[in-house]
Amino acid sequence: MVKNFDCIILGGGPAGLSASLYAYRAGLKTAIIDISAIGGAPTNYCEIENYLGFNKIQGFELCEKFENHIDEFEIKKFPYEEIESIDLISPIKKIKTKNCEFSAKSVIIATGAKNKKLGVIGEIENIGKGVSYCAVCDGAFYKDKIVAVVGGGNSALEEALYLTKHAKKVYLIHRRDSFRADKIIQNKIYSNKKIELVLDSIVEEILADKKVDAIKIKNSKNNKRAQLKIDGIFPYIGLEPNIEFFGTQLKLDEAGFILTDVCMKTNLEGVFAIGDVRKTPLRQVITAVSDGAIAGIEASKYIINLENVTIRK
Ligand code: NAP
Image 1 (cartoon, rainbow, N blue to C red):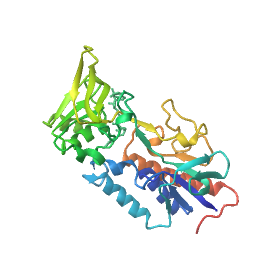
Image 2: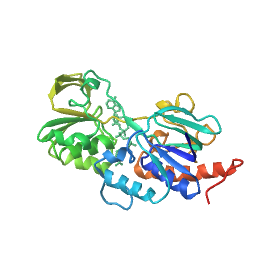
Image 3: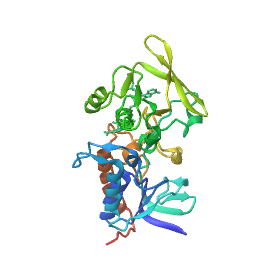
Image 4: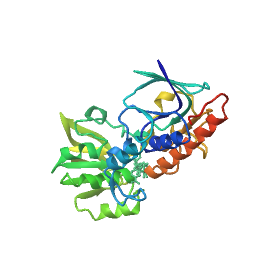
C-alpha cells in the first residue's frame, strides 16, 4: 500500500529534522525517509563548538536532542529505507524504497554529502583495514598507534585533534602550506605536540600487507618522495553530494551540488533541497537547520497554493 504524505523529507540529519519540524507545525502531514539511522553525519562528529547556545557538545548528543524534539510530534520516521526509484517531476512525487512506496505533494531533499576519496592505490581495498573516513567511529582502534589525516579543512583538523586522544602520533598531511580551517582550530593544531605537519605533500599510495602499514607521499614543491610508517589513514579532503537517486531530474552545479534559490526551491515544482547536498557558501549544522526551517515553510506555502489540498487542522 502506498503511504501518502503532504511533505516527504529525504534525509534525517539536522537539515531534514529541522524541515520536518517546520513543515509539521505549518500543518503538513510529514515524513522523513533515511537510508540509515536518523541523525545524519554530525552523529559521527567529535565535539561541535560552534552551534549557538552550546559551548561544546558531542555531535551525537546534539542530533539526539534534535530527534527528541521532533518525536514530540506526529512526524513519521522511516529509517533504513533504501531508495530504489524516485519521480520528482510529476505533480504527485513518487518514491519507491526496498520496503515501501510513498507519495507526496512536495519533497525536501536533505540527503547530505559523503567524504571524497583520495583516489590512490590501496585506498578502497583497505577500507576497514586501516583506511577510515570516521575518526569518531574508529579512533579507539588506534590507541598508542601512528595515524595520518589528510586535508586542510575544518574536518581534517578537527578529526586530527580528536585522534590525538587515542594515537601516539598524528601526521597531518596537506597539499598546501596553509590551512583553510577556522583559525581557532589551526591554533589548537599548532600547539598539539602529538601532531606532526606534513605540508605541501600529497599521498600517492597506501601500502598494506593484510592491513595498512605505510603511505608513499610526494612533496609538491621539491618533488621528493618519502614513505611514512603508519597504522591508519583518515582522508578528510572534502565532500561530494549524495545525489545518485535523482538521476538527471535536478539542476546541479559543476561539483554535483543541487542548485536552489534563497527559498531552497530547486528547478522542479514542489521540490526543495537543503543542507550539505545543495550549493551553499557554508556547510555547518547551524546553516543546515536554517535551510530546513525555510524549506519547511516554503513547502507548506507551495501546498496551500495547490488545488484540492486539505491541510491538517
Ligand atoms: P573542505 O573545507 O572542502 O576542505 C577540504 C580540504 O581537503 C582542503 O584543505 C583541500 O585542499 C583538501 N583537498 C581537496 N581535494 C584534495 C585532494 N584530492 N588531495 C588532497 N587534499 C585535497 O572540506 P571539509 O573539511 O570536509 O569540510 C566540508 C564543509 O563542512 C566545510 O564547509 C567545512 O567548513 C564544514 N565543516 C565545519 C565544521 C565546523 O564548523 N565545526 C566541521 C567540519 C566541517 P585545499 O585547501 O588546497 O583546497
